[in-house]
Length: 336
Image 1 (cartoon, rainbow, N blue to C red):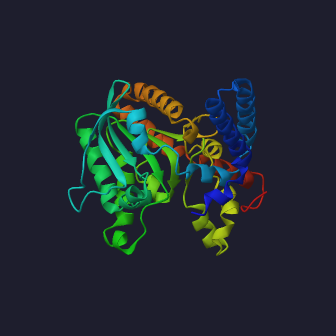
Image 2: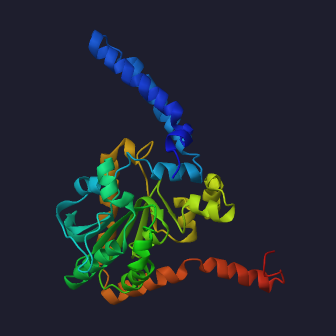
Image 3: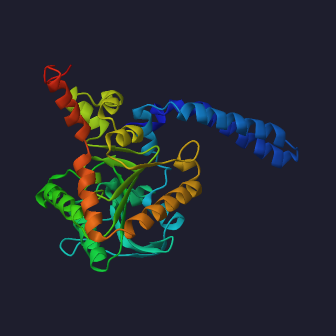
């Protein structure tokens, strides 16, 4: 993934001010001196820096924020957003993939089936969760729980946060590509509402395997892409260090995804990113889910599925319209 501590130089002015605030607070408490006025001035300055810096982030910088190890993970949202979580294990075939968290819970009065990719917090947890890259049994587990939700007419909520599905030989031998493709088909026709939120990384088919939804939302500093920037750079230039250039070409930022019709909503993050105020981010996510659930459960199932079908048929349609316009104008098919 790269060393984010090196690449995230854009945050240094903010971190320097925040460090100064901590020092003044510690000195004030130790010496019994009132420095509240100076501290407030520094906080105002830090907020001003955050607004300026985060308003002009490029694609690669958003990728780095999406990968921040302090960013709220699905397990954080279990307490910030959801209630009465009851975990459900296993795929009924191979085993229980730690990278895929599934279970019944409540959000704002709605009973839902939660399917979430999990990266883990400590090194031990990350190894157990395979750093958020699910195996085939993870996607099979997700689909089994979605079918259970369909049976009992419970909406499905998925949280996407993965660099990609695990690409190892063992995973391929157990049908990684097949099970992801199967999930796409089954989710497209699942007869219950599906909401999906990209909370961090949305890498390739690993993300797509659980985010075919009636409403797809994305956090302000998350990303969704057909391939990682490093993988794209390695293919195009045989040089993974050109990941920042690849990130720009992939059009993976929330605003670009919204423009393309890939995502439906962009959820604003607290000033400076979700990791700076997880509670505020959780409140925003919960409110968005409740609003979307209100709309989705009110629709008859046949109408819901028709809208889901049309939603995915529309993605990229404007490109086809542009091609027709160029042909009609006599321009060469490759461009104007």
